[in-house]
Image 1: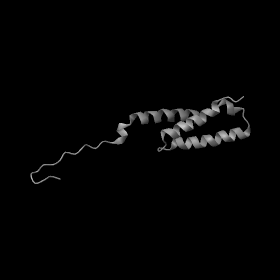
Image 2: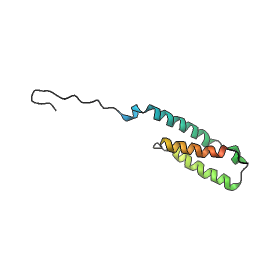
Image 3: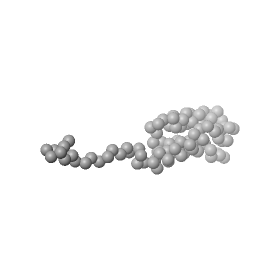
Image 4: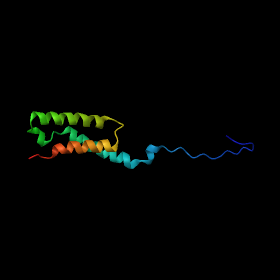
Length: 93
């Protein structure tokens, strides 16, 4: 709004927050790629596992897929899902 003499105070330009946080989106993209690879492949420890262990893996896999498919998943949720799926890659003695 201008004053009596026609002076209009300058306004700060609008800056979209999403464009300021490229590193976050890159990190989320990397985590999504890792999680996608882990969800699509059955680990060797599950191939010869008991029925209970296989059901547990399937349940965890479903939860991780929901995190992967959600557009609102945070970096922490994605990292937690990746860590959970990697636990099944470890060979248990």
